Amino acid sequence: MSQRKLKTPEEYAELVKAQQRIVELKKQNAKLHKELSKEKERKQDLHEAVYDAASIAFSELEIKPVKQVKKDTRKLDEEVAVIWCADWQMGKVTPTYNSRICSNRIDTYGQKILEITDIQRKSKKINKAHIWLLGDIIEGTDIFPGQAWLVDSGLYKQILDHGLKTLSNLIRTLLTSFETIHITGVIGNHGRLGRIGQHSYDDNGDRMLYKVCEMLFADEKRVTWDIPEGADGDRGWYAVDKIGNYSSLLVHGDQFRGQLGIPWYGVRKKVLGWKSMSSTGQMPEFKDVSFGHWHQIYSQDMNGITVRCSGSPESSNPYAAENLAAMGRASQRMMFVNPKKGIVTAEYQGIWLE
Image 1 (cartoon, rainbow, N blue to C red):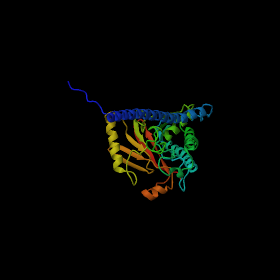
Image 2: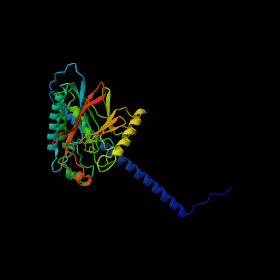
Image 3: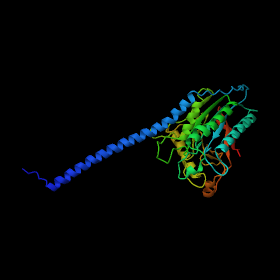
Image 4: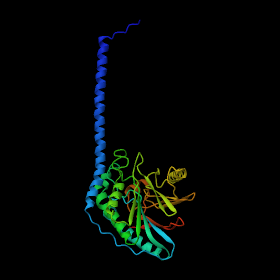
């Protein structure tokens, strides 16, 4: 029978020391886990506090509904107006742009929409409108180094003051001309809270603005909303808006990687990949793709898929001028869709806002 080897006093000392180290590591691990849980709870509380504060603020706020417009009953082809809202960058400051100028330009945009629609109504029946909120409606405050020096307001004013007033004023303006409005909103990269990975993947100032505005119009039955929510690792980055037999995939546009302007190859690769995924049921089916982010007017046909990019109401961007040698005129897009035929019948690539 083999005898068990006895440990020396030195070996026993090392063993005790190792056991004590294991106990210390377990205590540190438990402490870090507790701190991590608290931090997650703190961020979740902060996220929920914004919505709770907005709910309380608006629960006692009475906003009179806009007077119902007279329905057009003429026996004409029906069309739907599609209003694009992309890259307002509310809160951003350049030599010729800030929150006040942005708000004024969106007011101008609203009036031009009414004028263009009145022209289109001479031969078409247009009772409905869809608004596409394509992200970067706010500028954010800390998504890149030095951004704090390039804004005129913090997140509170960007979301609950300037942003909310500007977006709600546009909606109320359009309600004076359209019987119903359906709004679809996707998030942008500037809506992100802090740097990448600093907060929850689905925390986004754009989405907060959309949800608060939805609360504001809770009693306005003529306005409906579709705001994708993040879940299970998906940050809710896209939506498909259906207008009768027409549909478009809405994304912000930061999904397309590239430099020096719109990445043509990157757009084509992603769009055709998404179309392939839709054909296998991995994504909803769509006809076209619409986005912003690049602040440039762009359209391209890809095997029957029309890809469109909107301009921005922003002007005089020193960074874009120096690093990209590209700077578009202040603009937004608009188009009209025949829901029965499932086609775009007319489009205004650039509604100039300066």
